[in-house]
Length: 233
Ligand code: ADP
Ligand code: MG
Image (cartoon, rainbow, N blue to C red; front, side):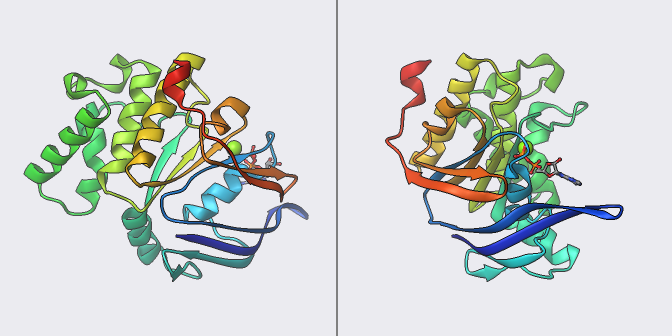
């Protein structure tokens, strides 16, 4: 599903340059649930943003679903992003003046899905994340855990090949974090490929494989026995 080879990325700020990713190699198969671990500043978000086609590497190759991601114009990149990828962020990134339902429906609107189908699909995804009763509420009427559930429903709405989550539990308390991880585990159980960036060990152990990043290189990449989140809620 995902294959990256010898990926490098530097940030140029004025005259100086910061080498953040220093030759990253890894691949993710369909149906995997992988965490990318590492301390703050180790390059996790940089890597995820490249995988999410929000940024481009300086060197190396990236293949997503057998399609080489390289020098795409913004229009093609946006099309692939919409089709292949769903994003979940630490800060939820919901639109404050739109209802939970309308937030979920937004990616479908951009895909040109008609209103009726858009609303039916979005409602079904809200039901799936346990928020049918909250469909017409605004984000500021929801708890942090509920907001993240809306964001997850939104990420699923376009049925992407891969879900990319950058610290999805970073703004949540432990119990709520585990509830969100339980939802993510359930989505993976159904076959969805998911990458989760985290710096928390307990969250990483709720995935099936941990990729450890340090100073821009992978220092460890191991399968783990998945801890089921529900047992810790
Ligand atoms: P992590 O997500 O693991 O905390 P990041 O990938 O966000 O790490 O950042 C890695 C390093 O790159 C950090 O030192 C950060 O300050 C730097 N960095 C990230 N984004 C930019 C940017 N747009 N411009 C310059 N430096 C950046
Ligand atoms: Mg980060």
